[in-house]
Image 1 (spheres, rainbow, N blue to C red):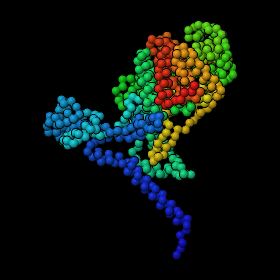
Image 2: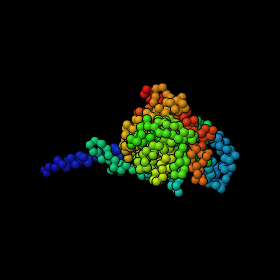
Image 3: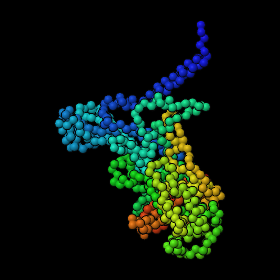
Length: 569
């Protein structure tokens, strides 16, 4: 009898093992992953579908504990309709059905009486418990249309980050936000991909490696729902409404890794009812898609560049004359007043335009341009949201001293808020430019996940520069912001305010159109959070120190208590 080679036996055993693994996996897939779908098909025998199939992955928020909270998911949507040709007595049918759902009795009877009609709708978005009660009646001529719809359990929470799902031509696709940016990953083709899953999965050194990372998946974001809701409420109640402003915006981010905990522009919208929104402009994310002249918060970058290049120190002084003429144009401090001989610390404390102009002159055109480009102001940040704009920084290529002077205090160049907070985060975190991002993890099923991998990180200033500028911004908080009245006894907080004129439709700076900005991070020397707040055209207050200091401190105290941040002084 011929012996079977040992290698053949091993191949047979391995093949059987692989077959068993696939079979067990397939059964598990059908019972666990696809179980709800097949149950739904059984249920659909008692209702009809609209013919438009929507299957889509889930988007999650992440609580501080790490627990995932559904931010965008699929749910069943019911429509109540009638086939009047099968209805004997419309009045009796109305008596049975109208009280169950609070429908309009007259409208119901009128539609039920259309004997020549085979289909007429009574109500959309009927609650499931009402539908179950109506179905239990088993009345002829009653139609329950069952479809899938996208549900956003948080309503307006982070709406501009999430986006929504709507028709693009005849196809349902993600519109705006994460729904659009990750549409190809979230959309479900309807095909059974279990077999391709095993084809894509290999074992190497005990680890699963997914070859196709564009497959269907769910998104886990870094948005913390409680933080997001607090930011939105603060901007709405204590900024937008209080100052009758045209709009307000904010970002809360981890300056060390770029994770975004909260991001919003108000007014916003409800993605569950986006078709009823009267102002579609609220669908766009102004923090990513908009550009603005940021004002004096940019002095943070100017002084960082000057200190890093060694052309100034915190103790360097200059003679502040209040205003100067450059290239036939006059530029001045916000109040036009001279300060005499002052230090760089006072440039931050009093937000002196002449001081930042002095630093720009010390740096020179080429070095100033190089630092601002290194801070990423002329490029996309790479954030995982659609339609990211690029800063308008053409003045940094100008031969005129005037353009560098105005850029040094945040005028003449227009930046996206996300690029601005990324640049100042580099000052906060020790000098490294990070990539802002909303999605921290992608889940592909069967326990296979991929984490966000940071990219394009680079050092832009020295650690020593970061520490020194953070110290100067902390002094500004403790001694200068509203005359030091907001200083926290046990926490170091670094801040800078800004007030910038905006360009009107005529291409000239408006005397009424202002943007207030406020940036701060804490604890100053080991920051856990960086916060950027903005408000457009606030009424009754001229400076950001008055409009945004209070909201900023509310956010700081909330974050300290919510995350139990220990004192650092």
